[in-house]
Length: 151
Image 1 (cartoon, rainbow, N blue to C red):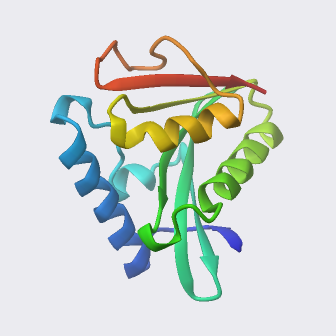
Image 2: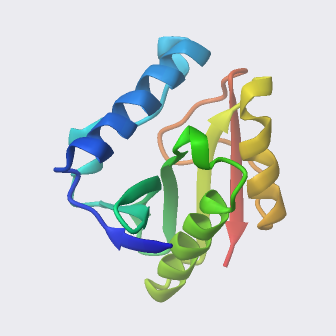
């Protein structure tokens, strides 16, 4: 698996982001959907990576800088046929290593509270993330779970 910084210009990665946004819209009400679109992922405070096996897209993830010591994980997504193969874990490891290189002391994330998000929550817990209060511009929301990890 090769993880590389991605400029989001390729059609396969754009389709995966579109799939991600559509899926989030199906699972969460609009006021509780915090996924970034392509333009949001291209902002200067966001670094986006995609994972590949040869020419096959496996998944993606991003790291948004909240401040000099705090980052937020965004847009974690695995292509459906590659779920359960360790793609998300490898991407998460890569993102956490980058956060450490940047000198972040904490990495946080928002994910859904519904049953469909349980695999994601379990993955984050297995990496040492713990529930926390809303951070950055988030507010309490019954459809959201907020998690953080001290580095």
